[in-house]
Length: 273
Length: 276
Image 1 (spheres, rainbow over the protein chains, first blue to last red):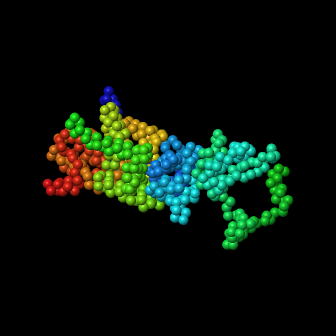
Image 2: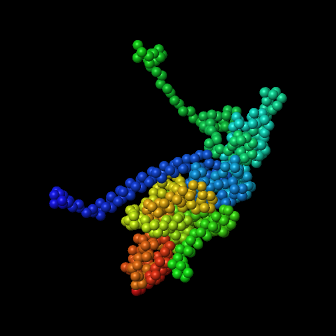
Image 3: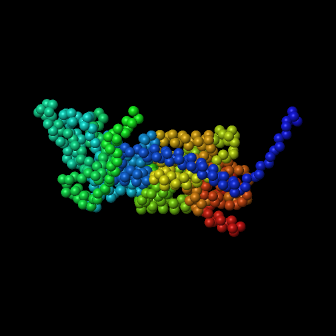
């Protein structure tokens, strides 16, 4: 059998030189690292995309917080009310970082803020909850309460001021606005109004809300607030009007069309005739 | 009984250290103990001595975080500790993943999986250094601590202390990977924290020392070693294991029936060698 087989000449391959081996190995390593690097980065981009996470008091801005938090859980252990949780795999929050769910357990605003000074990295920054060299939990900014006036029964005309009563900044962060109820003619609406500049986002209102799904809830400030931008000035406010002092106009000129008005109006119809 | 102790004394001590550390961390969160509070990323001993994971802090630095003084102190404590006792001592004496991969490795030996897949090493052990470099690059580009977001070590440790969530899946993945895909896959090839401690451990004082004159070439040590390449001198030369990749797990010392391996202090071992 074997004799009938055509003899295949075995070509001897040159041994690979050390230099070639090194360069190829490096290229292989870099190629695989690129694959891994993109997959890894894509995962991190997704994993850190969640914008609806409520952080402990005095946390840095979210992107700085993600850089600085070492995920040690010391703040979680310091919290006497078990408010703070560490994000577990499956919680769909940046893994290992502290957060809280006010409907379950709100922040009870301890005056000594035990969760903050224990932070070893400064991701929870004592300076952000300090006024006149004293810890001041009322200056915390964990988020802002938002009222859904469609599901808030106080807006229906049913008397409820649970959130107003629960607010630790009583009468400051939430006030009640009285308004005549024209449906009955003799009752008043007592509507809760949140003042975003005073609200700390502790979530005691959300915790206290009587509706099935809370009609008042905490959102991160970035998510809950808009921004008017620099174009609009309160003309009735002297301090706001000062912004005009150093303002300078940006001159823009739009070149007038040389064509006559009828030409311009009819030009797009030319194809039809 | 005496033989059992002799053959497994370091394994027993390692499990004791690993589990007691876990219990101390767990107790701090569950019952408010203050001996060891936090987790492997950063913690405090008795509320005084800070400890921080130097590799995590390196990633923070790359990500552009402002580093607090407390944190740097914690890094110094951990770095000096492992510089003295051997960088990868963390891997075999502290890291909870080690228990998972050791179990996988044990079952691999018992089920004789190597006989069906062969003993050829399909992957380089240098992958860990590539992953280490990559993690720093990604930290820099993405502005977050890259490995801390995927690390099964912190996931498992945090899970045991604070609640596991889907962390069990990470444990299972590592176990199956080491059992069926790659021998010593995670700890011996991929883990960048191990890579980091390998680099740190190059200079450590405590080393395993081999005396060639006692060696009978039974190769039990190489069989049991999770980082075989560090034992290249077995039966050839009397040398300390100088590679930082040795995790000082001491399995080789236990299985050696001929007293050819033991712990020694680096300088003494080197002196003895040059003196002979």
